[in-house]
Image (cartoon, rainbow over all chains, first blue to last red; front, top):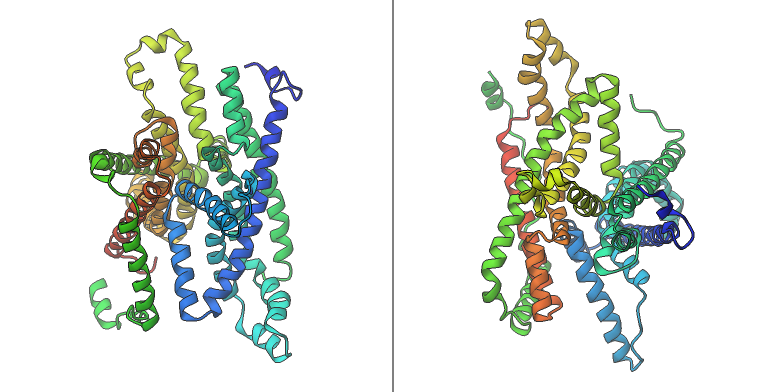
Length: 235
Length: 272
């Protein structure tokens, strides 16, 4: 194995790989946050919304969880960019070139949103009803209840599921290689194809992904300990 | 004995499901039927008859991949889980490391590592090129099969670890008190109880596995996804083939879920 291929400066491909890792992480963070926002909205809708909202959200989560991510990513990637372009054409604006990053974040976010809806719904349901009633008794508005009581109180129940979702998000970014977004997996393949050192580069990318997972695990452990402070430890 | 108890106890009745025929649901259904009809009428489906046979072959290939990789992956998951619970320390570390590595990297990367990496490595050795294995190793599916199987084994191995650890100690002690040898105890008590405990998650894992199978299309295995990809490049249609693909996977997932529910109801789980 020729490790000089992984050098950071141009004859080596290390810098390219790290740039790919950076865009993978951008995608993962952006998609995860968008998914969280969708998830909070979706969970509130599923718990407190009217019958139509509830049924529509049920359809959304069921569809996303039943169709392969790869297919969803292709569908949303093309449909999303198409839709925006048609919208701008309708408004008489010149067609915009949507950045791959924005489209990718949108796609990962929609997929993650369905899963975090379910995670957050379960976590909110685990909060003792008295706490929310107490907030209402204090005259808090629904939004303030959400911000001050519901979200912090559900955190210990949601952290395991949400951290799992973060790990899935980092790995799902690899699927965007199929639509040609240069994240870590695609640049690895390009580097490997150019130099014909397939094993070296794919192993290197694997080490990078694994490092992200392991670092995340350490951070997740710390967050979990903090979220669970003051709670009775399970036997 | 069990049967008598079951007749005395009142059967558990789940709370009544909300009716499918509520007005807003009827309305939503009408909307979906309308959208579906519009899709059938206004989109182009004339390519369908031409690719019908290939599509069916592709679905068959997907199902075969799903069944074989899940089956062999599960066989591999049992020792992986068991070793992590009782094995000697080096084996424990090895199994744990395997699960961490597979679960910590994207499946697509593993697939490409095996296909491009190992594939190009194998090609360098004349011994391998001349062996009887070469005609198989030159094809794509052994790599797709291996990657999918290892991935299933790693995820399910983690589940089996929990399942083995969760079997109540008393049952194992009872088996030992009956004078069962270690292997008999494993075969009669520990393994069946662990599998029974892992059944509910097995459904989810199998659905996830079904959703992973289209990745093999990126290494030229002709599954459902790659047939649709061929349709797309032949006809230059963007949406119609993808929508059909989504529908196919939706139906397959539905069938899997129903089949597993049937299976779970067949397995008695009192006190599990």
